[in-house]
Image 1 (cartoon, rainbow, N blue to C red):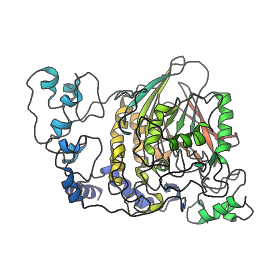
Image 2: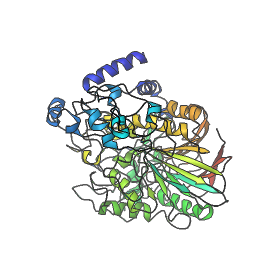
Image 3: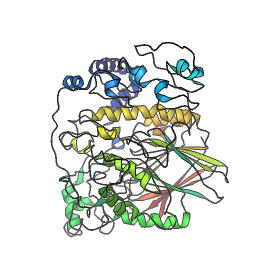
Image 4: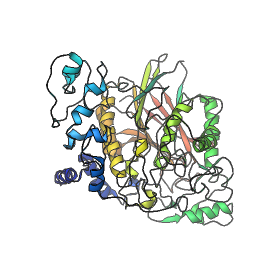
Length: 589
């Protein structure tokens, strides 16, 4: 059935100029249908948000009209890395695979005259111009003529069968410049941030945290946007948690809706639905409580870096439209970073330490895609510690005095909340109900429209999978880690295969607003996975307190302290009060 579904999907996709999901995509859909009623399969943060953004539909010209207005060739469209459904033919690195390249694709987009000739493998190129490409059979058609000075074969007007690229080193690929921001926000996708080297022979700690960025109610928004205030007192400076819904453990009964929770905040708990499990002084300031424990432990343990799994700013990331220049930081961006990040996570052990970051669904916009996610990327070049140069990228870290190293892969998994425009408006980056009419991030390299949004995120996800497999297959590091937003359980078969086939050691995630240390998970073929969604930017899945029988995991608010050596990864789950509530060890795989 899956093979038949894939055949039908591919045929329809070619006729509609839409990329098929691939076998794993079909399998994932089938598994979701089977597992839809399992509480363990619940991936969404059921927030019940109301009133923070306006709603509106989208109207657009027909696909044929749009295609006609854009032209029919890569000389019209330009060359890129993402699928663009409004084009009559494609100019991205996957078009050969789907048989929908424009006739001038090779000469315009897959030629050494465009890339230049050198000895390095370039993973973002559809073909190679290096001195070893002949050995791997992935040279551009004009390689011999352009780079060797020999006649070589003439370029073919029809696209050839796709070639298989060589597996590059885990630290290979495009080197990201610390000094030069990209022209567009996605230009450094798949690149490697410059290697880090950490000296010393003491314990080597890394902290992991996620879903930490509360609402900046003191921000005076522009462009007709409402202020980010959900309850009384929310206009004061500093972070304020968003009050989410709370359900029972089986996720079959709503115990407390958003309005109920707002009433708890407004009345300091004096008038409050008991199902909310509201704890005054904890639920009202979880980010600051977690940050205090974070800073206290940092002063003792001196973490070398922080793994940040995203949802950095509630409700919808940076509160301005995408498309600002990558060379500048807007006043809105500066205000939110100062109030929610810079003014909260600093001090002994933290100042100047790099935050290796990814975007969460709320950073893309939550229920929209056109908020200022690109400004979070641009902030990389305006900060001495914020590192988010692209939606997906890698970092190599050496510990020379202790004789080990690690490769960390930052992955964007937000395709999980990028559904068709008519679906699930409260948990859909691409939803038509809340995205404004005419929403577009094409100037930033993002989705060009609501209609194009799901395909954009599918393409982004599909291009990361072979990238990750290639990097892992050639990694020479002692430890390999993936840092991403969506929690343990999403794409479980894929991540499990990375563990069994390529030796992925640890998966660090967030999105669910609690702390879950899943040691040697059978769902992930024995790999250990963390959910660190309890950073406090939003209220937790269940009431915070010593009784954890009403939800999964070991804590509701907190972070992880991970100690690395050549022979062991030792993981400690730290509660918001600073107490260690669970530990686990990971050994070389």
